[in-house]
Image 1: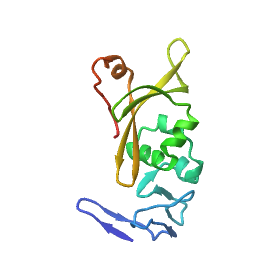
Image 2: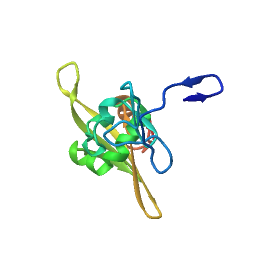
Image 3: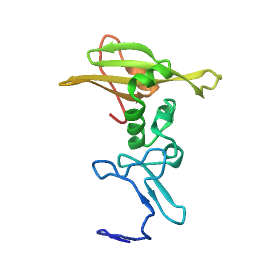
Image 4: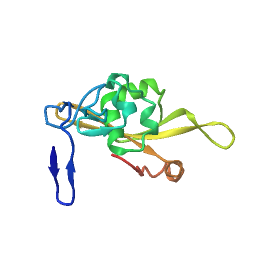
Length: 164
């Protein structure tokens, strides 16, 4: 097969398996979305290319704690979309620290990250709730420690960084 683009051309054998979702994006659950005869596989979730360790598991087997360590923004969004906000909060024992209007500051004690004295370092998340026709939508975004320290209780400013 030949796939010509502006500055590159991809030439490869025809895949032995190709799976897409209803929007024609690469997608398969618990198996490769693209598989070649030589064993090369590509895992994808609704068009997002996944590392093999996520892709070979069915999305219902994905773990909430993965959300806290994932660095790739697209994969991070796919994890949250499938795992769901409610399940993440339930499985990770989320504590609500503060709220203002549609924003809520959350803390999660994460056993895989420690400070210099051996204490677990909490992970902070900013939850934003938006009501719209047909329901409520939650978005969560990681916060770093300096943003928490810079927040003044008398001035409810929000300083999110990352992936909303």
